[in-house]
Image: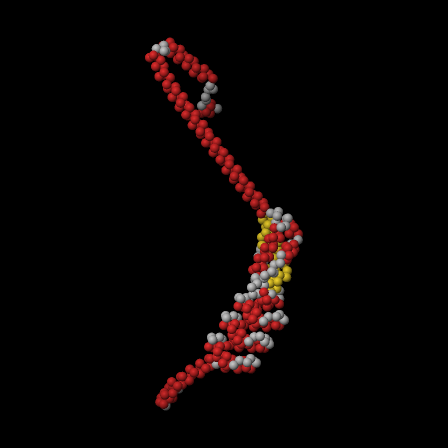
Amino acid sequence: MLFILLNQSPNLWVWIPSIIVLLALLVAFFYYVPMGLWVTARFSGVKLGIPQLIGMRLRRVQPSIIVEELIKASKAELGDVKFGSLEAHYLAKGNITTVVDALISAKNARIPLSFEEAAAIDLAGRNVFEAVKDSVNTKVIDSPQIEAVAKDGIQLIVKARITVRAHLDKLVGGAGEETVVARVGQGIVSAIGSAEGHEHILADPEQISRKIDAEGLSVGTAYEVLSIDIADVDIGKSIGAELKAEEAKAELQVARAKAEEKRAEAVAEEQYYKARVQEMRAKLIEAEAQVPMAIAEAFRLGNLGVMDYYRLQNMEADTKMRRSFSEPEETNPEEEDGES
């Protein structure tokens, strides 16, 4: 249709650039001047001017979020929530929706909370709306299974439930849930470790809670510990018996090592004496080898006669015979087996 009109009226081609520029200006105007948001804010009782909306666009702030939260704050009669404060918190990468919801919840619960405090809690990385709910309603934290050993060496496995309430004025700079759980675990280990026997804990688990309460767990934390309830107590291993068994094994290994050391010393000593015997035998053989040479030398020198030599031979033969009579006869094991 547009092309038909342009063909019928050639003068309209002159106006096309102007029309395009006008459309672009209209689009830019309605983008930077959100008239719909301005009308909504005015009818909702929020005094917000068009220059402020344009300024938000230029500062890359979403006007719809700011206007919506201003309307919520106005309807909830939150006097300390201002346009500048919301925009500054938004530019600081804060969650203004959570902050406004927390302020409304705190006002309804009659909990004193200012916008600056809520913004500080939000920028600290905590969910301020959840913190307000935890301040109104108590929160139950389940601790993990905590293992501790009594003085009698029996291990106990304890699980506790911690009921806390949040303190809004301590959320910034105060320790969180992890610290509370860690302190409860420390108290459980201390209470069980100081017990004379595990049966005392099983008979009265509340003594764990009393000992933990006396230590003041909420100091420096963002929570007030209302109660610590022992949910479950189980008997684990006999750590004392295991330690004694390991000690006995270690002592046995030490005794075996010492016995092996003594055996090695005895074997070494035996080998030493065997070597000494062989050495003495070698010396004896060497000495016996010199006897014929001494006899021959005596013959040459005339110190020994033939009759003397015969008498010496007879004495040696007689000695061997007497020695054979005194020594037991050796038997062959194979012959004995055959005879049997």
